[in-house]
Image 1 (spheres, one colour):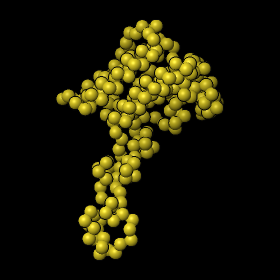
Image 2 (tube, rainbow, N blue to C red; image 1 turned 90 degrees about the horizontal axis):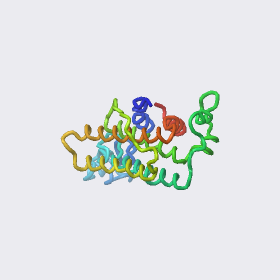
Image 3 (cartoon, helix red, strand yellow; image 1 turned 180 degrees about the vertical axis):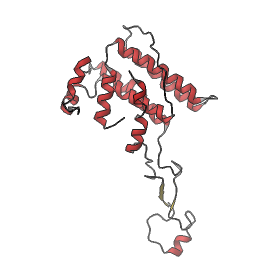
Image 4 (cartoon, helix red, strand yellow; image 1 turned 135 degrees about the vertical axis):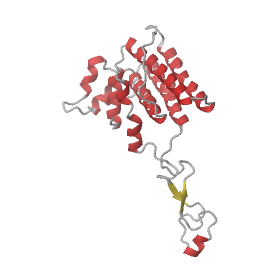
Length: 227
């Protein structure tokens, strides 16, 4: 898999507005002191909060208009692995399409066949794994991490899938610890952890014959994320 082709996911999500600050909706917000009240200029000047300036800088995004909590991203990845993916596997909700079969979910013009995707792929074990990958690539962009070095790790092909997901999910809490108690080079340490996680999960997918790249590409098109 060409991992680096997905490094544009974060920018695509930012451009789409996924990171837009929900508090100020663009970098500023109405003064909480006078708000939308109809005030004369004189009374507005007397406002002890904005002193006549109806908008003040948002403290959530510091006026950038962009905000998303890193912990939120980590929680989403953990939820996809421990909750959604594991739940789908235990309920035998696996994709009906494997290998070249994933090529059948596209029309001749390359657009996704939504009916087939919804029936055969969406909300399956493989689909949730693909969503976890997308969130992880988003996390890479969040930390401005590029050019990952992915090495194939050795796994037991008979490794129980539920246990594998628990192992992989531990990476999320490791990164949380790095963020909460940062070392000298937190981004460098996080890069190493992400490379380990990707190497491990890619090997896991290969040994279980999961065409994860095709599932990622299908999910990206389904969500309208162009990279």
